[in-house]
Amino acid sequence: MSGVPILEIVDLHAAYGRIEVLRGVDLIVPKGAVMALLGPNGAGKSTLTKVVCAQKEATSGDIHLGGVHVTDASPEQLARLGLCTVPEGRSVFPNLTVEENLQLMSYAGVSASAVMETAYAYFPRLKERRRQLAGTMSGGEQQMLAMSRALSSDPALLILDELSMGLAPLIVDELYDTVAGIAETGISILCIEQFARTALRVSDYAAVMSGGRIVATGEPDEILETMSDVILGGAA
Image (cartoon, rainbow, N blue to C red):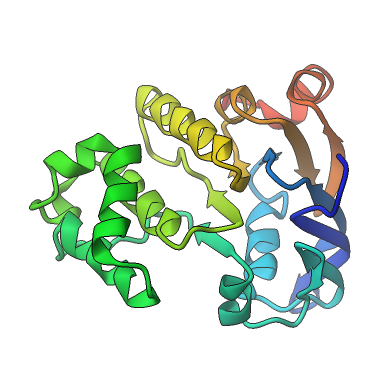
């Protein structure tokens, strides 16, 4: 892990009312790496994502994105620095076609043809479905569309929040194969996941959250070996 990390989180705390949910999180995501952030429900993964993406305020601690201090940055500032998130639950416009969903991304300054070229290169199935209403597609196809919209912004760091939620294992495998392909282009990726094995298969590093802290970091094999009771549970 050399050079300036794409994401560095130092002693981060956050709370809902009086209940502290993040209790001193330390995490480093190296540039160009895929990191899996694993842990059971209630470990604090979603809250950490919200704080990093400026949807929730930290009570204390520091966040650096590509070496820039962003603890109090707005979502717009984070986007300009290259942070992009595919949130849990697939953010697509159900009453628009695939093509119309993708065209919306062109308002951010990228040509519509470039947005579509990127989307169809990663996900050829979207090209077949381009005239279909997004809401009538399968969950896996909607996730492909959500990922395509994120990729059109040419992110430096892509955060994928529970990519596998509600999807069949074969589809999840397919999506993670694409994650590996995205990483090969130099985009750094943080995958927040409950389903450990699939995410670990394509990750360079992994971190495990439990009780609002990072309790282990390392390479996927050692994490799987030493933390299987925490990260696998019934959801391997």
